[in-house]
Length: 315
Ligand code: GLU
Image 1 (tube, helix red, strand yellow):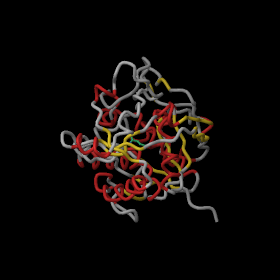
Image 2 (cartoon, protein in one colour):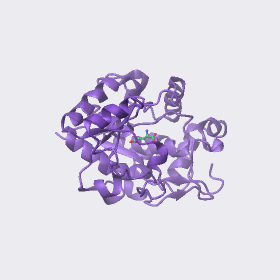
Image 3 (cartoon, rainbow, N blue to C red):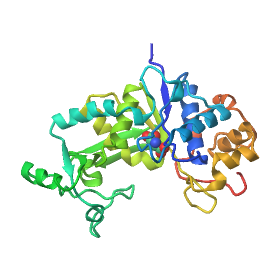
Image 4 (spheres, rainbow, N blue to C red):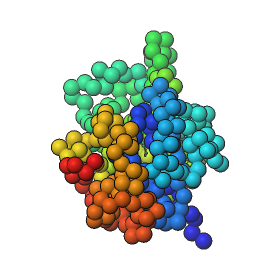
């Protein structure tokens, strides 16, 4: 018997959800449910100052309002223990230790200005490719530097090209050393990095399909490599196009009018879901729909692969 599909929402509740996050949740729900699966809610509040619990609670209420409640996780919990990343540090520590035991982890003392030196090459996601400055420090040099500064911790990536086929965007490849560089596993204040936490959590929560924005496509080779190094089973990935405002800007939480707070004043859940489905290419008109009504005929092939500029006046 085929294993049941498990999708997930993995929001960072640093504010109210906007159309981009909401569309991602709608697609994650449709993708898992149309395959007869279920959906897990994991709250990515690694930085508890930016992501207070009140926002997470609001987010869950918003998902329920839309008809997109998760089957497992969030405040409801489930077999994986806590579904709040801020409460899972001990678990991340175990997997971090596995990488450290392989000799793959080293402390990095570089300052922000050193990292952003004018000549620093950039990754496709705009971040700096780390030059490896601290990789060769001797134990003596490390001990000396640690007297003055707490280091962040990086993982050594191989000079290897990781290829995978995204369920929506197709083939994608990146050379870890050249296109990405040694990346953070842990910040200087002890907070584990997203790249590690997301891999550990998706694996331990039994996630079989990850639906998320195309801005994270370039994180996927790093994550696939971590799955391999940690001996964990990787899910399939489906990256969805980013939603842009009619003038071509990326939607962000700062776009007040696209936040759920404002949208709820103007639309019923069915009106909002219908309009999102129209913007995503899932139906021909913005007619009101429930998520369940959209299951019939759901097909990733209907969704564009390029960024979607929201039609003027749709929201
Ligand atoms: N927490 C991330 C966000 O809200 C999503 C991470 C993921 O889907 O892998 O953008």
